[in-house]
Length: 153
Image 1 (cartoon, rainbow, N blue to C red):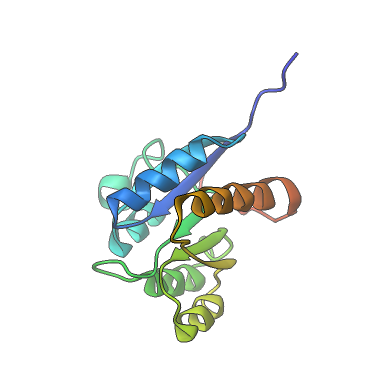
Image 2 (tube, one colour):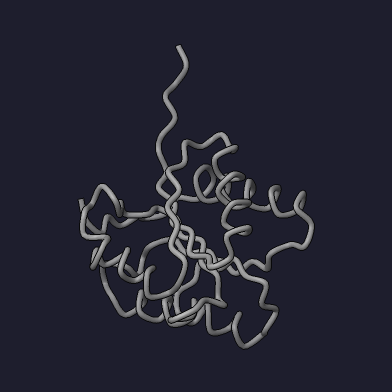
């Protein structure tokens, strides 16, 4: 009898629809049962995580076990999101992978200072991008023991 796959809720914070589609389709093609949610800017990300505004329903905004966060976002950038998450005890231990085109050394340092678990530059080639995401999933969901903190039920 085949073992049932566990479900992994993933929040993608990405303003570029093409990048979101690539990330989402790659995640859904992995061996992991992924429930992918998408927000398009930093303010919406914080509303989702704090269950505010249109995200009040827990069914619409389940707690993510992994967040893919772009840096260059409208309204509130990814570094501001990380900083707010770090200051909130209910959010600071959520796994957050910065997935961005930014090569800025300052952004890299700041992202880790604000609690990012990984900082990955988006590869320019689709094949590298999909392989990289698959490796990230295996790393966080098969290899690493991490004290996932339930923000809310």
